[in-house]
Amino acid sequence: MALNENLRIGFEISLNKLFTDYIDDVSTTYVDEALLQANRGPVAVELAYRGNEINHAASYPPGGTTRGNPSNKDWFYFTGMTVSFRLGGENSSNGGGKNKSACPINVY
Image (cartoon, rainbow, N blue to C red; front, side, top):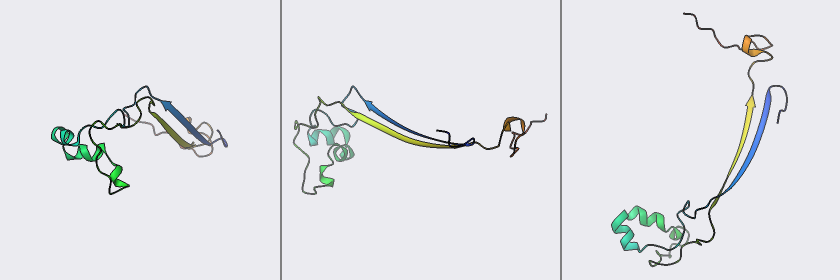
């Protein structure tokens, strides 16, 4: 939207449905904790189950426990806002106008 000759604002929202359920790494079932640690290390175990960050008494679920709902695919959204201000006035590309902020000329 142009607010005046030199100032414009914009706002956008994008809602995107994906055809996968793995973008957030929550789908199907949990891998056995010992197997995950042996193959991927302790950081993988920490990232695979984060429920203990809220409930400190919670522990890693047994292997095969349902993790998420594979029938519900993932979604993500994006929001953004822009503000544009034109430097220079009318015909600023040739140095005319009120502000005279034309680009410098290269001399060889």
